[in-house]
Length: 244
Image 1 (cartoon, rainbow, N blue to C red):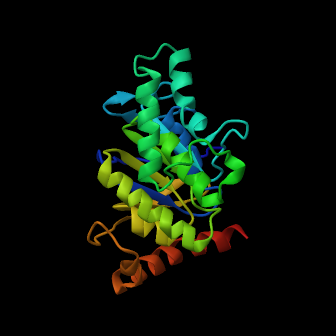
Image 2 (spheres, helix red, strand yellow):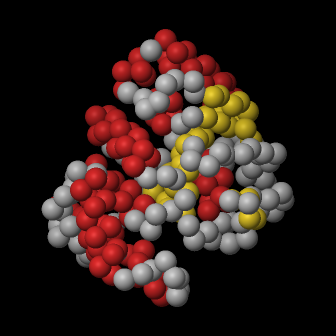
């Protein structure tokens, strides 16, 4: 059984795009293909002009579960990518002090200055997700893949994370690919939204978000945003009912 079929698209450098759709439509599979964690059985995935034939090096990933190592401090969790790069002889590893300075700067950027010596268990869910984003960005990747990274957070914290992502993108240049079930999140963060269908997964609709950037939470209550969210909900809902 095919997970994805006839998915053809191009993501501009520096943009953020979002994939929405019913559960099981292949959104997470698509992310794994882009990252090189799964091999394609047909067609090709090309990143920065080169076919993806294995795990990409210049990519960061953040998931719904922050997956912080509980026996390591926040700072040591952030330094984990350095250890992996060193073990693989990657020239990007550099010296530890450079990475430490970069980690402390990132923590300050996300409002966690002084938290480097704390344990993950001492942090709230939102704070752990901020650390997860920092870890995904510490090696300055060109591509950031986000698999429902804010879904487990309460509504207010989730909106704070949207604004944080907006500020991180303004401060650092990277291309973002977001998988989410939250249509408001997709409208706030993405320039283009792909609505996927199931069996097999494919892109059913494409929406360019025309709202001005940088976006504010107030814009999500505008007529334009409300209509786009309503339309996408209608495009997804019939497929959910058909699967029932």
